[in-house]
Image (cartoon, rainbow, N blue to C red; front, side, top):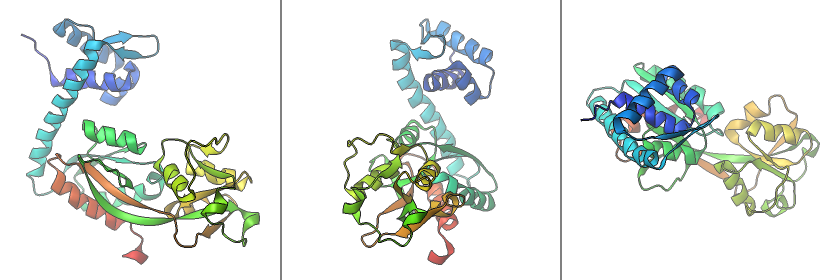
Amino acid sequence: MMNLTFKQLRYFEALAHHAHFGRAAAACSISQPALSVQIKELEQQLNAILFERGARQVRLTVFGEALALRVRDILRSVDELEDLARASRDRLVGRLRIGIIPTIAPYLLPAIIKELSRTHPGLDIHVRETLTQKLIQELTDGRIDAAVVALPVSEPSLNEVQLLSEKFVLVRPATDAGKPVPDRAALQEMKLLLLEEGHCFRDQALSFCNIRSAQPREGLDASSLTTLVQMVGAGMGVTLLPEMAVEVETRSTEVAIASFKDPQPSRTIGMIWRNTNPLGRELLRISDVVREAINPPRSR
């Protein structure tokens, strides 16, 4: 009879996710040799090779891929048992894993953490910053409990709660200050600088400008809003920026900010979590705290 442990399954799942012994060991807070020993013991108990070992990374075997799907389900169920016990308490305590997208994190995360720490001092908050699609997958896999993203995500398995709506502004070189604000048709003819593929903010900006994402855009994409604003300051083009980012991103770069005429481009920020999460009621309360933290005083 096999004597598998949850520890071995978690180590296996981490290695399957990171495809690298060093990164997986770091994620599990153990040494790389200790992780290797646990994986080897798991393979011996199953009498099967789970990973192809390479010089720089590891790859799941066919059996390993099949096992990974079942292990994720097992670990998710175990986590939900723990969450079910936590949900029976009067106040949420312990680990809370929150995901957040890069176009929100630098501007709202400090206020969110501060308010959650004040209202829920027993929480051990872990933050994961990455793109929306990765956060959705990690929610589905049970790697995180909730995420702050741009809505809608339109996933039937996820709850969506609105937190904040905000406008986008036009950022252009300082020499353009005072010039008429271009409409969406005029923007199509300008050098519009945007975030690289995968960012939902990019898709929102393209949608407002009625530009197809497939159009060639060599040299016009960046990996962060900070870089976009710096490119504008260097005279390379214009860009759109969410209102929450204006103060931080234009602090040290000389650019001109202008508001669009109606209909103004905008986005809705919300919090999402799995429908099946036993902490659903507590996460709804958490969303109320987050909403209070991030809405500016003038809109309260």
